[in-house]
Each structure stands twice: as C-alpha cells, then as structure tokens.
Image (tube, rainbow, N blue to C red):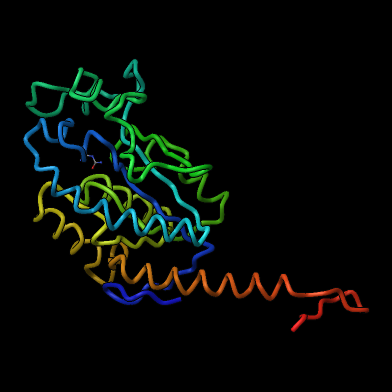
Length: 247
Ligand code: C5J
C-alpha cells in the first residue's frame, strides 16, 4: 500500500510496521513541567498531541503494533553517565526535585506519558536512558521477534529523540517514516531542518509524510481486513476438506 511521502511514496506494509511514539511525557509537554521550567514554550510540542491521538486511535482500531518510549533513569541514577548528568549550565539536573517529581526519573509523575496518549493493554513501553530508543534497551529484539521491518515514528522532540531513534533504526535495517504533524520541537527551525535532513539525498534516513495520508491508508487497511474477516467467517468445510464460501 503506497503512502504519499517525501522524497517518494512509502511502501506501507501494515503487518510489518509498528507505530513508535517517542517520549510524549508530562515533563516535556505539560505546562508546569520541567520543559517549561527551563524556559521552553510547551505549546510548540502540544500541537502534536491531537494528531497523535487521532493516529493512535486509528492504529489501534486497525489492530497494528504500537510501542511507546519514555526517556528517563533508574531512581539510583546508576544508568546515568556523567556526560549526560553534568552537561549544560542549568541549575536543575536529572534526578533533582522538579515541578512534577524527580526530573527524568522512572516512576515520577513528570516522567510518565501524558494521559491523552496513555498506553493501553499490552502495548510495550520502552524505558530508555539515552536519546535514541535503541541504545541500552531491548527495542531491537522486541521488533525482531514481532517481525517488524518498518517504523512510523511520532513524538518529541523532532531533532533530539525522534531524529536519534530514526538514525539508529536506519542503521539496523528498518525503514522509517516520520509523521510531520505528529512530531514537534520547542524550536521550529530545528524541527524543519531535522525533517529536511531525514528526507534529503533520496531519503538518507527515511521518509516524511502527514497523518492524513496514514489515516487514509489505515482506513483502507481496516476495511480490507474487515472484508476478509467477513468472508473468512462465512465459509463451510467442503467434502474435500477445503472451504467453500457461503454467499
Ligand atoms: C527528547 C530531549 N525526548 N529533548 N529529549 O527529545 O532531551
């Protein structure tokens, strides 16, 4: 199934594709969280919530794989290396008490996924200590075991965790499509140029498309699956042990 995308149409194979939602966490997106405390305008990220809600609902309705990620660290910070801990000139650092609990620490309120996109049922949540979702996680094994070869990637921020993850995935042999209106950055210029870099040189890191194209493809896929399920349901065993459709 072809999806309109840049730099050329994406050959979407739903059974081999997972929706990977990166770091839609309270501390990055909610007013009063750590991101805002650092002086960032969270409305730049929040514009991606509604398109993600719609895409996630359609993805779930189509019964395809969904994986969520969260950036954060163990409470004792043993998975936080000094380079990440000490970088920057902020007064507040990872592990310090922030507006929504200890900053980027697993189990804290600010570390969790926003309610609008909260994981359901068996959807895996990959906790990652780095920017990329493959570093120091079992994401690659999880995808291999499920036969996934393609990733539709959404989340925040475009130029940091989304982009790092897509580059890691690319080197591991996955085809990635970033959904432009479902990713966001505090810095619109970084968002724009990250997407440009992804699709440059014939799609050096992957494809970029819009959620409306994915939604249209998912609708077609769901209708086709329903039709197949309907015809599969309406069969009876014939005398040779095969099946005969009941019209
Ligand atoms: C993410 C960050 N998720 N910007 N983290 O992009 O530090």
